[in-house]
Image (cartoon, rainbow, N blue to C red; front, side, top):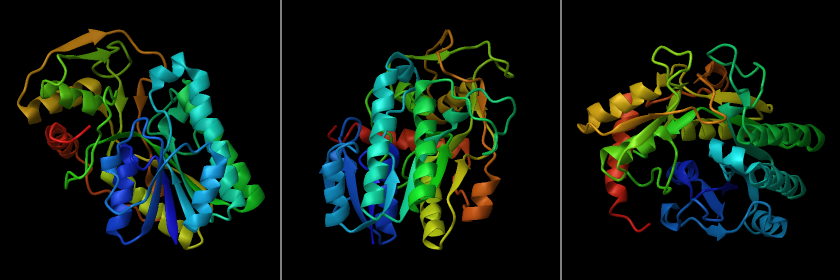
Length: 328
């Protein structure tokens, strides 16, 4: 049994590849390297450079490697960019996913795990958010992911493709062994930006919006360590292999931190007091997103190991220091 990882040279995907290889799984990666890196793919894992929307290429990979499961990470993920380039996001996130799903059905793939997002919920009326709460995306990014969720459910019902949809909250941190981490230049993830600023890779950083209805006026997010997220995927794959039914699950810790709290944590742990400018709100940003993740814990047996903001920041800082020594 071989697992196809789309986007396996990117941030989360590369962690997934390492974890699967550590567990003795056979893996192949498909990535167009638009935001990923060849060096991030674990040694000995085949890397095919191409797009998920290239159906002849995907069909060939499925047949040549006897793929029985797909974990689909490949996507464009920057919310403000999706507002300015909605058609690009619908092409890459929705149209290409539709092509991949069709190949999976035709190629006899048994299991599919989809990287979705808390952005499908929009600005929720209450927190924490449960999987059955209304979906109302505020950005083309969120809409593009929700459309793929719908396609995957419908294709599963029609063709027997068993899928787990995982809705991520805010992913951060790095592999504790420092094999991989968030490496994309110009990344917009808050913790990534803050640690870059602490290490003088940026002159300063901005806080977007200080007038939200939160205790300090800045957005609140549920930050999940990338390695805990990867373990949720491994647990989801085991669940499907046991014959588990298709399901949609939140992946978060169930508590959040504001933008200012995260910046304070980075300053404290790094020992650097870096400049922060206050700016207006960005389009598409909800005030508060926190997961209710009981279902993932109960159904998958998922047990997070890094539920601690200081640990997440420490791992991100360690990776950022190492990143300067790697070939980009």
